Amino acid sequence: MKGNFNQLINGDKPVLIDFHAEWCGPCKAQAPIIKEVAKEMGGKVRIVKIDVDKNQAIAQKYQVRGVPTLALFKNGQVLWKQAGMLGKQQILNVIGQHL
Image (cartoon, rainbow, N blue to C red; front, side, top):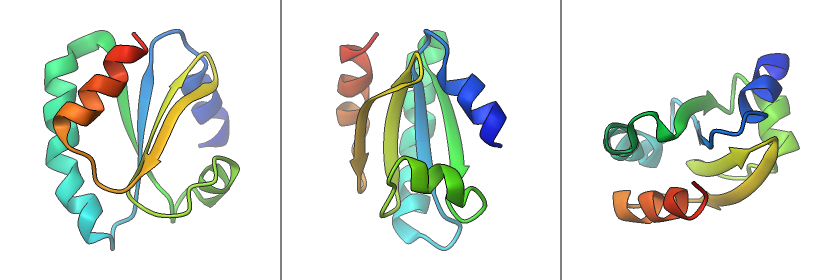
């Protein structure tokens, strides 16, 4: 995933990464909110789920200490990162600031 991940975050289209884990209850609750955000944003932002257990090197590199953690990337840079569950409007506001 490492090479693909770098390619993924290096574009000029914002990429929202949902760092999650299969065993994480709040991650499961966050999933439908992320789907709603994806629907509402259309093609303006790419949304990708990264399982921290399967991609430990990436999670470590970006200092993901808890799940769920959302991070917004553009041109290879972390524009924003926050751990914990977030509401749809909070996520949309953050993305909107970086479009």
